[in-house]
Amino acid sequence: MKKVKVTPDKAGQAIILSTNNPEFGFVRVEQTRTTIDDNGWVKNKPVAALIFGSVAELRKAGFTAGQELDGKIVIREQLTPFNKNAPEKDLKVAGKTGITCMVNEQPIYRKAFYSQDANAQDVLIAHTNVEVIKAAYAKALEAAKASDLAL
Image (tube, rainbow, N blue to C red; front, side, top):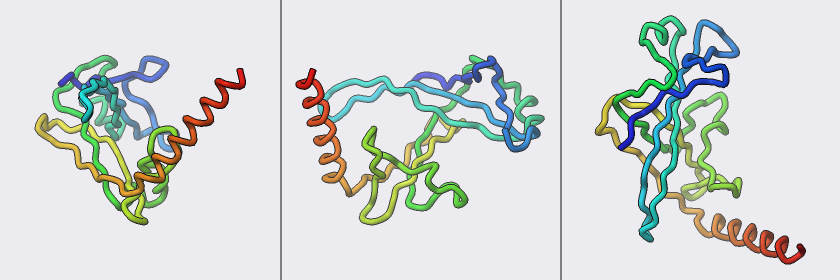
C-alpha cells in the first residue's frame, strides 16, 4: 500500500485555515489505493481525508506539503449521519447517478479518515437499492448512445 501524502492547497500551504474560525484548520491527506474488482480489473484510485485541529496543534505536528505519513486512509460507512447539522454532506452516492445508496429506506453515510494504524480496516455497508442504481446507469448509457447517434 502506498504512503499517505499531505496535499497542499493552491497556494502550497499544508495547513488550510477554516473559513469560519482562523484558529482552526485542517490538513488534507491522500493515498492511492490499488484494487482488483470481482472481474479481475485493476484500478488505481486516490482517496482523501482531512485531519482537523487547532492551527497551533497542526503546526506543532509539523505537517508539510508533500510529507509522507505512516498509516492509511480508511473508509467508514454507517446508517447515522457523521454531521447531524449537515447530514447531506456525507451521503454515499452511486457514481454520477446522484442516487443515494440505501439499506432498505435508510441512507448510507460515508466518510474517509486518516488512521496511524496500518492495520485499520474499512467499514463498508452494502446497499440494497441496486436495481434503482442499475436502471439509472442504463438510462444514462441510452442517453449517451442517442447523443452519439445524433452527431
